[in-house]
Image (cartoon, rainbow, N blue to C red):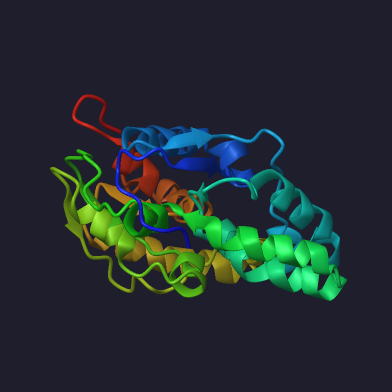
Length: 256
């Protein structure tokens, strides 16, 4: 991981948009950039970036993900840090790319992966561990509950970093989510292959969210938010969902 830096330093950061966010939730990406620039980072969006290969690897086609791993390294290896508002995709890069190149027997690519992978960070890791901040100057006067997504919790072990950031938000009423560490049931292709089980798990999570009385459900992965939020929407529960980046980017002048 990169050496700690203070807010206001000129840290050159690449935004790893991820396929889902780039296609469906661009507001999360815009919020990430606004937030990091407010903290003094130089944020670049490399237009040559593509998918990290997670869907191929997770469905048993890891060998076919090799060109995507090579492209990822080509695009991102020159930056001080690479940040993504997705624990799922960062988890894939940090925990799957090494295995893919090892199976391919490409020693040169393996060396480049080893150089690049430690610089790939989930948003809360960059803020807390690299920039050394928890109070990012956010203002969000709403009752909020937080769902820790499986990959951020179990693969990246981000711990309470997102909660540290949320607790420092001015005006927020942060309430604990019962059974927070239980999976919401999305799981990428799991939701398609095991739809009934996925919806049942998501319904349990939605019930817990409603029980908190929260106005807003927050998480660090839009895929999980879409799954839980879809169920909440069909139930007309009156709970909206927002990515962590959008809450942290919110200010009194421009609230989310």
